[in-house]
Length: 405
Image (cartoon, rainbow, N blue to C red; front, side, top):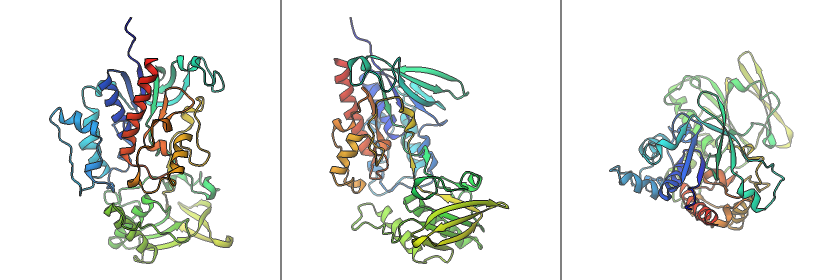
């Protein structure tokens, strides 16, 4: 008897998920590619107006390039030009999703909200063949809001890390008053050139120190030059931020870091930097927000703003697999073996220095369940897309061995 083809559930139609779908199709394996957004690469589109730091030459996987080239579609391969998220989605990801081997199996507007093992709880059949023999059970919500159960022989979680923005408060928890002030808090990097109205001529409290916050500070400074009355208080947790990397291999990243450090030092009269502070409390009053910032030694400063732009990072949906036997790092939230390997390699270092760390680092106690792509790095920001494509190779090699047994 010829064994049946395995069926995979691939969560997220972004760079890693689409790459995994193409690999599954190439092997003749069945799969469903779930995407919560109404278009492919929903997470990428949330920052579609922002340019990547990396050039076209490393922004599309070899699998995507081969599959598209076979149908006469060439992907940009420039070593100098860096696409925006929207350009990447339209030139590569949308076209990969529309390929005949992918599109019929792509479930858009369909969210996987929980994954379990049929007939088993998290604490049952620990490291036994009986657990691997049970199919995965996925609770799925379709575009109409209807719930259903799907089943799969393996699950690849490629859902990304932008699904759960971090709270504003110190210690990574919500600040008092944050929930009440939520209507006046933005948690995604806005396109201020396309829609300046919420920010122009207003006072904004910008919170964060990563690349998104640096980009927002730059964009707000440019907006202020054209819109009098625009004021920004920039709350940065590090007391002495240093963002530039010596001999940075990514010129676009270096330019942003240099401009952001200049803004911290007063390059724009519209930007008032507050390094070394944490958000202590928020209070919504008369359509505005009063925010207490706590500095060194516990001193408080109260700032009044029309809006808060909270760019404090985000994490993936870890509750998705709470009934599975997934071993996560207590610090980064990444799968434990991968997190340990990254720590052993010096904590990850710069993203451009990243190399694959081997198939074994992707293995969880839960058989045939893999976390791939940027979500696999947890809170480690050194991820590069080519790592996700290497992970796809490694995971499928392990699955092939498993299904052959």
